[in-house]
Image 1 (cartoon, rainbow, N blue to C red):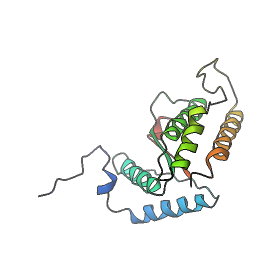
Image 2: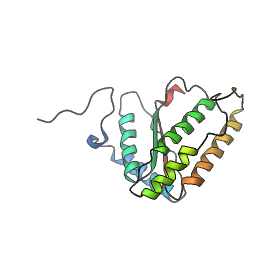
Image 3: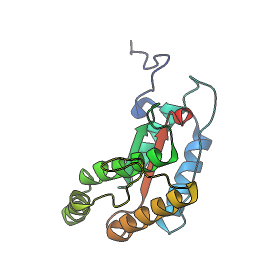
Length: 171
């Protein structure tokens, strides 16, 4: 007799995930588009307990199989502003980048070394300095500049960077 992998309220292991073929196809197609310089945005929305987190974990496993740099984080109530969200994502990207794994040792070393030295250059959200009151458009622009800098330094070694945020209702 096999063990039932489903526990209400908890995500399922991606290896035991079944179903949602249409959603997996959409994600896989979007991921493929990003390999050719056409990044995509997807949102998984629905009522609590319908499997959004499990689906997100399945997407994560697919992206990692394709050697993508994957950042998957749960947002909590402390991320309560655009400034904090931007910093939250950049910091998570830096941490995952330091541990990026690939079969190509040179690619791993190049990506890991970049993120070891990478410093988030904008003081957003008050981390490491005075809290800056920036209008949303300025925050978006600074966030975009940071992402462009990261991309420029890792794009030849990483097929795509995938950022996954769960529990986004806290924002």
